Image 1 (tube, rainbow over the protein chains, first blue to last red):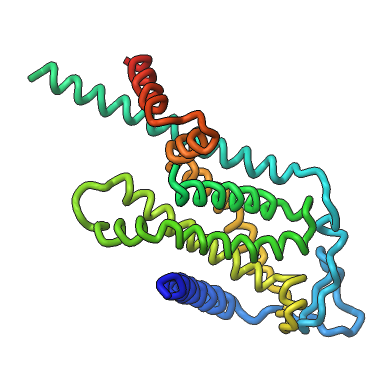
Image 2: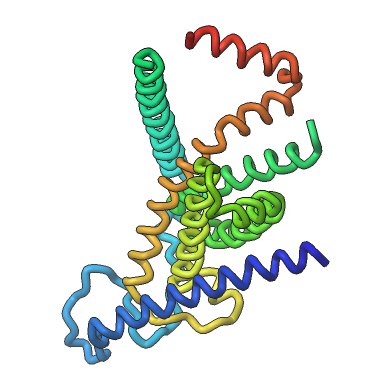
Length: 112
Length: 167
């Protein structure tokens, strides 16, 4: 019962935040003006990215754009590298500022 | 080692691995990317449930003196949570597999949601890096205990050795 209550709390909070984000994006989108909708009259200019469906039609499966199978996991390695760099940067920064703090404390102690 | 710590560690390692795979849709393919992210959301909910007591305790003492480290950790966790929601929401808006499979109407292509999805995914890498960094000591200690190398005495001995080396 407790667990169900906690799950509901998490989902409610997530829904509230999600709703706020959705409202913010929609309001910023509407304030920018209506989105251009191309009529299918054959005269529309060529778009940079294919597969634009302004009427909300079914989208074709993108088995070409994202590589439909298991490829080389460079993206995973890249993600792991970024996380590692951020973590190492944090450690170095905390060590640097930690040393500064102890150095200042030592100075205060020696003066006293 | 307590069962809860072992469970937390194994879940966290699995969640992290799933996160890395989900961050690379070009290798995994869009279908795996979308379904894996749904599973990842469930794993994150379980992660929050396992750490519920910490969340409640820090929330209660958020505005009291001290606890600066926990406060920073708490704020970072909230940012990660909000970013995760943004990733999920924008992902649903641009979904190509899950939404049609569930029989829901696809939305008109909206580049705002796509760019939000990309931006929030990139931000999640940085936030995840900080999250791992802030919990690194716990990760290392728990991994050592899980593989039997870290008894209470040897962990204490390691800490004393490091302190001597630093001095």
